[in-house]
Length: 252
Image (cartoon, rainbow, N blue to C red; front, side):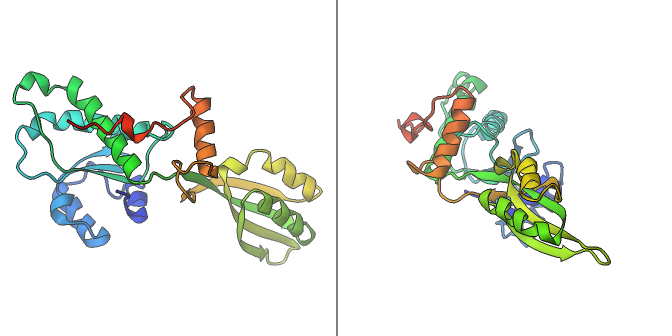
């Protein structure tokens, strides 16, 4: 299930993290983000890299031997959230709930070799069943220019899915400051095109600002987002298609 965007940002900023006292953290999650306090006390891990904005939460009731496999489940979360099911990219803002576990009575069949890949497959199946989405990084672009160059700036930004949100004249000067959001994926060659459309009068600065959810799902056939994921997979040497749910949806 998706995490609240504000909580995701709080984790990325280190305001909520794995090193916090679990009772204090649970109270913050309950008071500020609407979590059930019992669930909040049973967060097993953050991932990837033990600090990322994805959570593994134990919501089981009375499962035997559960503590024996906890470390293996955590290792699986780190793996799955580092290499997501759609394109082996980092996951962001995902909460995995462990609802129930049935374990072999013989301890030899409860080792990491059995549990880690099984748990990873369960994470992947959960993602595919939950309508996965893609987030793209967005630049904050700040452009200094004279008034006669503003039209050219809008023209270039519109072609690249950019969104202007501020346009102000600098006091006492003929220069304007234009601020816009620009998808990182659309930024290649941006500076050169901007110069050519403004006769070299526009001076941009780009800095990462936030992640933004793209419309649709990578599992929607023929969609723009599926095309993007396919290109990423091919670049990484993977099969072009996202693995179907049947690859991970095991039944006894």
